[in-house]
Length: 280
Image (tube, rainbow, N blue to C red; front, top):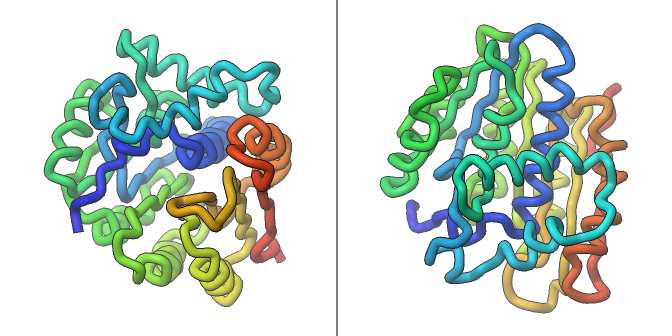
């Protein structure tokens, strides 16, 4: 199904959590001199104009990144993520928000490589345009689930795979676990970051349970709820990270209370940081 376009939701609270976690993982990877590989299975357009009509149809960024940019005293651990957002706007000359591919291109070095997959007929050309001058980047207008299996393991032997499907099909909640297990078999030392929406708590309980059953070592879960679950829509979102860097849980734990305070829309705003499977 190809009805979903991320431009409607760019810069919302779910993006904030997702991209902050991605930035922290990449920050960890680039501390070592050896090159690394970034793979995005559902890359979208890569960058979004928040002044465009499509973004303002829902204007979700107003309760997301816009709140962070005007908030006082963000925790130091969020500084580099917020700098990346500001750099994206500075580059375009207009109010803009970076998708995960732009965050990755901003964080990574000349020796690193990026592979971006996008099948949507409207977003794929935008993705190509946004990264046509970056020699580190290969864009694949192909199904990300299929292509990611072909791209792993990478020559660099270090890297992050981001998996962010639309969840238009309920089976995605089960299929993503099987897909990560398959990717892990090909590249056992890679880091895998899965984003998920929370519109039905029971689905997430099942998703978490399936990761526990999978038993992939060092699997961490981070979740941010911004309003009560009795309202329609996505009231929370989360990231599940397999082979999480040893620094990640502490970094995200420093940010989550502040994010809940700034992005919370009612007194039910809360968060979770859970070890789903331990390192040993």
